[in-house]
Amino acid sequence: MNLEPKSKNVRVLMVCMGNICRSPTAEGVLRRALQRHAPYLNVEVDSAGTHGYHIGEPPDRRSIAHAQRRGIDLSGLRARQLVAEDFQRFDWIVCMDAANVRAAERLRPEESSAQLVRLLDWSPDHVERDVPDPYYGGAEDFERVLDLVERAVLGLIEELRQPWRSPS
Image 1: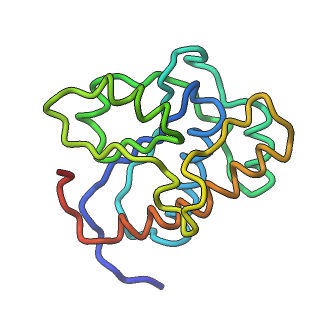
Image 2 (image 1 turned 180 degrees about the horizontal axis):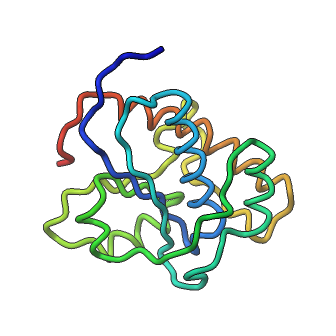
């Protein structure tokens, strides 16, 4: 049993393009990983897309199915679009790729102190920088996304375990 004290609440927003494949997968993976590896951390997790193509829709059925095989339930999530207010509400805006970092940066208010980063910056091997979009791919592409996200999320949790500091 881990008796580490509860930390200050930290808010993490996972971001991809449509919020139906990569970012809801990352949201679900992070939620599960926090429960398993750091239940003492107070972390709020959400996801959004830089484009509004799928607002209100559940994640892609393939994302749901592949995540479910790993014990992660995405079925209750619904797509929403990233908005400027998210940069005030969240401490970390975690994008799946460079294109979404650029799209998020265009929305970012000047006074925002939120950290805008790519998820794979926390990957232990740092070989890939972008989580590839599996939307037009097959089963292996959805599995690859899960593999990449699961590895990087463990690194993100290590970052969140550090003494909380206000993003600069």
